[in-house]
Image (cartoon, rainbow, N blue to C red; front, side, top):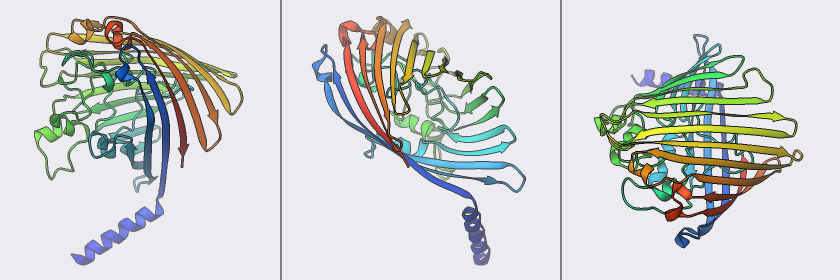
Length: 387
């Protein structure tokens, strides 16, 4: 037994040594300032941080298939042993098996997904909607405030940050994918927010996001939480047109087991960009539908247009205009009936290994409630590097 174990260990070491293993990472530091005259307590300024380490390996299997595997460790500014530690176990963890142009994936946060506004906010920083620019209002069922201040949908209820399996098919016009997760991250306890994502806010949801271990310690709570199954169909590509970038996604989840009889959770997104010379124009439309209870639901819609101009290889300018609203009979919809409007101007400076992006954003009727949340202005400067 000791000899067998030793031989097995040596074989594993040899296999790892001969494979192509790459370690990389990135670091982002930012400074943000917010001014909300309606609620002075929500005017603030300060630094933010995000860092990530990536470990990836790839090679060829003895049956002729190719494989890739990896995981990432993300350490954001709030990773202090609390909720932020979810990035340690849910960041880009995967095993890919590829035959020709078809890839089978097991993992989390790896397959293509709609959680990006970069095709519209091309020079600016992050999501279109102003995050963290209004305080909490009321109690359960009303607008959730700082957790996701803007009405503009972000990830479209995508389940990409939940463990699942999927297929990606590469074609001459782009990539088609389908991703299935047995337990989605949506929870009736957070369905009243405009994003509706659990992010392990309750112990019953932790397993649904990070998952249990291989199986040594497991229970229905650690495997399923309150989420039900979900699938997502996606496409990204140029449709055979040079300069065109198209992305379209549709996902659907069954009602949570705490909300039986309610409507399915549905997310849809169509967008893209087109580059001609020094100009790039981007469009985005996305909508999310969710149930607050078995009887009450809402629909959240966002529309935006963006433009970028490359002055030269170092300097770029950008602008975005966006509108978002929420409708339905759920409390979150009836309490936030105004149309939220967002304007962004941005500038980027590429110095090679280090890139600086800065943007100024003006948001009216924050969260769809001008009377309560008012308007807000915020600015952010981000310095980024990769290694």
